[in-house]
Picture 1: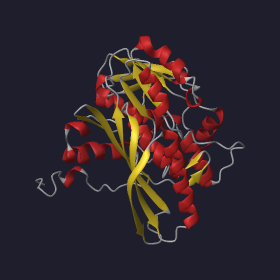
Picture 2 (picture 1 turned 30 degrees about the horizontal axis):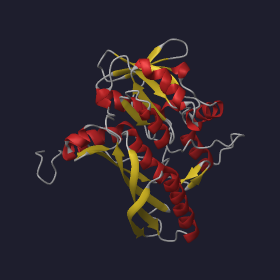
Picture 3 (picture 1 turned 90 degrees about the vertical axis):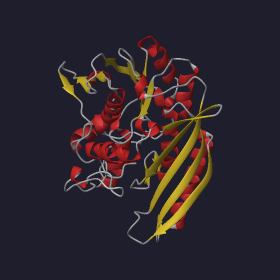
Picture 4 (picture 1 turned 180 degrees about the horizontal axis):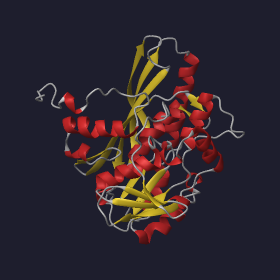
Length: 347
């Protein structure tokens, strides 16, 4: 098939493929890289960052967007309102930006109780106040009953990047340290537990949290941070693979150094999940020169959401763009991008 102006990518590249429920994993990564980036290609998009870093007269801006389709709308530790604000704020923070302005687009299903919408809007207001952002524009659409799952929210945000800050996967270098900001897997397991009505004796709370202030402190400490990435869909494994691919480096990590709570680990064993691939909404990795790593960990540990921060590995010399993990018994294995379906509607 010859590409045309209306269809620049041969559909034969994607034979008999449909979009899976949940929309995550290697398939979505390949579609974004092979279809959307090929059509929309430009230097800002090709940087493969959490948002676009735009140079303007007098400085730089970061621009990010995210859509939120979680079910249930309210869950232990948060709701779709908090998630929609924190999600975009965190993407901007991963670019090294101070979040300033957000837009909010609502897709509402016919029959949605006004009380539910009011609770969500109040949560968004609280989250905006906590992070210091202003919701300055938006849009609302209503779809027919049964076609909207209650409410979907898209937020886009703009933040200002301070002078001298340059955060990008392209800056990752050999021997850089890889720091994980805290325990992993809680958000995905919290959603699955309440959705499926599973009783794990203790209520597992989502790790949902804003990351702008904790990142700001790291940047103010002048640690020459090379890359930041929040660990949302696809978890730690996918986040590290994205960095390795974009930065053309290999990353080595140690399983014994990755914090996972016992209740989350037990739930993963019951449900057949690998904590490395379970989504988080308040965790990130920071990659920076090894000599600055301990100071960065000390800064993170001063915050509630960074108490379990630890160095989990380093950037290797090889440029195979892969992630290699040393298991607790000393064996090594490649940690791939998630290849199967993701947990549906977790963010």
